[in-house]
Length: 274
Length: 287
Ligand SMILES: Nc1ncnc2c1ncn2[C@@H]1O[C@H](COP(=O)(O)OP(=O)(O)O)[C@@H](O)[C@H]1O
Ligand SMILES: [Mg+2]
Image (cartoon, rainbow over the protein chains, first blue to last red):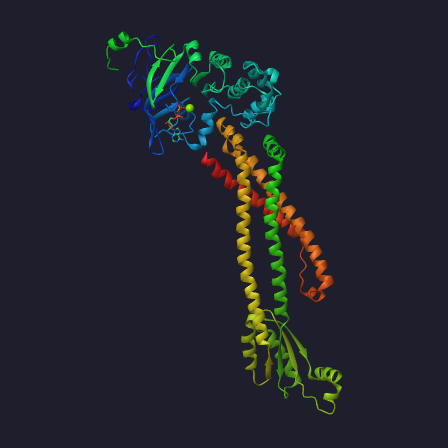
């Protein structure tokens, strides 16, 4: 399950310090890590290098923004996590599952450890809000009574109780995304992955969505959000991982969307041998 | 479990138009196949009856003693490829002849031989059999066999069998392609559902089951529809033949349409299940 000792590499983040980190700093293996990537590369069809030697470690309970320009490799990184994609090389452990060794038939087990939210909501148009969320429980074979019990709570959490009989077509984009988040959270996964959840939404609506994600994080879910939403990132001041051309170029805690360069500090910081 | 069945059934309702299209497509291709099989069955049955109608006549020597006849009959019956042997005594034949041609036969002594009418179970052995019996010189005078007619009928039957086989092959292949394609379309229409099921961690079995049931129902209903059409068509065609070409009637085989319809519907269900399994597998792998 775990990465072998010799290859144990993660990322140790000195909180409070603004530093440019080397591409792959070897650090102590963190057993409480929700996500652990080391030297992961992804090459599409043998030509496009979408990710290149990426290493990172996200401990359980973290709230992390993944930022970067379009085509930087954010979606690719997220797809790796829910095993929509296998790395061309490198090691990858998510929620205790070693994805490089996970058998295809065990993929559902991994997916039950996470909720996934997309830019385009992905709701089923012929089902009501309630039915859409129920669907995510039923396909896991959960008993009806149990589902009925936990649904109101999650609907309340995303603030959609009043629209639970509406069809997705009757909802605004922000409301649809709330429903999608409710569906992702209904089975109380330890990890929530969101790929540009506010990409189609106006700034005010985005604030609401980000608050829902923050609330989920406050309840203990590890949240990883890929986003372009500068305002939200700056407002929340959480850990920010910046990706450019398939590489991590910045990884800092309580950060803003753009790098707040403190040239003196970064340049005078002694190069440590990790 | 209940959810799965419910899913399969509500999918029917949700995708009403497409369901109709799938069922009718399957029905049409199965009706074609079934119609061909029925027609072919009738034609080849008629050909077999035509072949069966041929008889071989064994004429005994004039001097044969009556006591020897049962043994001879036994001997012919024992031959391979002989279905039945009927004995006609020379007196019987003569009586028949004098009755039918009173003028030609008057004042002539009975020159008719004792005769065995042999029905064959295997028309292909007819020539060999006649050769063999001809060799029993001590009791047999000659053997009469409508050889050339028989051979041409046999050739026609062979031809029909080959055409039938090729046709059935092509039509079964066509039905398979049509059904699996139809189901692939309906699987494609479910791609959102399938994607979501996969993302929330549903097991492959859970994803497949409703689609499997759906494909099976499509096939079953399509097959039943095809059977109904063929039943109707066969009935009116039968009536037409009886009224207009009654000479064909003895060559018609009666088909147990209930069983045929059942087989068609079940075949449709099987085809639907198989088609959906194949297309689901291919589709899921492509995701
Ligand atoms: N399925 C794919 N096949 C080939 N190249 C791809 C595929 N998906 C993404 N890419 C390429 O990989 C790079 C990273 O893409 P992506 O991860 O989607 O970026 P982002 O989500 O940050 O916008 C881009 O250059 C993109 O063109
Ligand atoms: Mg993207």
